[in-house]
Image: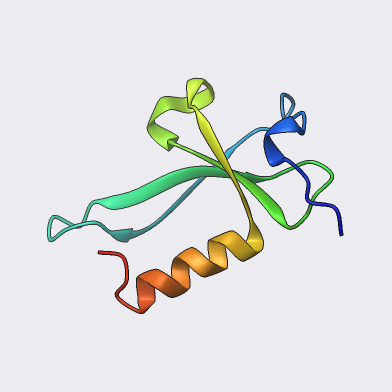
Length: 79
């Protein structure tokens, strides 16, 4: 299977959706991100800073990359 460079996919028409959940400290502040599915690839995501709105720089990840990240976090490998 050919690996796709996610940064070569045109995402100029994508509207990022603000997703919030979970407090980040004892002050019960929510942590939020802006995210969307990458066009033409349902297993890839665009993630940005929800506080910056449309001007946010974005990162792109495959579903497997995100699964690996969350698994490492839950295993205590990332603090």
